[in-house]
Image: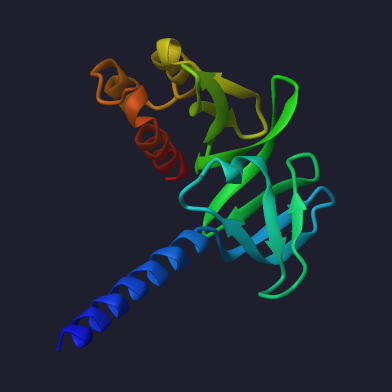
Length: 188
């Protein structure tokens, strides 16, 4: 009886260890997506995405046509954009360096997030900056201290948005909501 109990407990422990190890190795997965080359050609297939380390998507795109096929890695100087699991990353030049930025809102004024690793208090942290871009326009960093002024200039054609900014309905913390509201009204 005692041996059966020990055997049962051992099986449970082994099963938990196997499940835990499987999850740690299965962090990065491939999702449907595409890559747009500098020539404008589109490659459809799968893109690697690590949900536990979002920063990886800002550095490179690991592409394969299908499971088991050759993996090609693209950096921001090699492609225009890529999309993984419905999220689009676009190559842009920030302070002389070509990087991927995540498109958070698309429309009359696009909103992007850039992530950079910074060394802070003996630790590496990931910091997000936001950028806006009018259609066929300039790529501008949105500064938290000048947020209201910068956004009002670009969205001055929408009286409701300008009033909402004055009433503090929109702040730097809900920037995506602001851009989505503006782009939705601009498309109507």
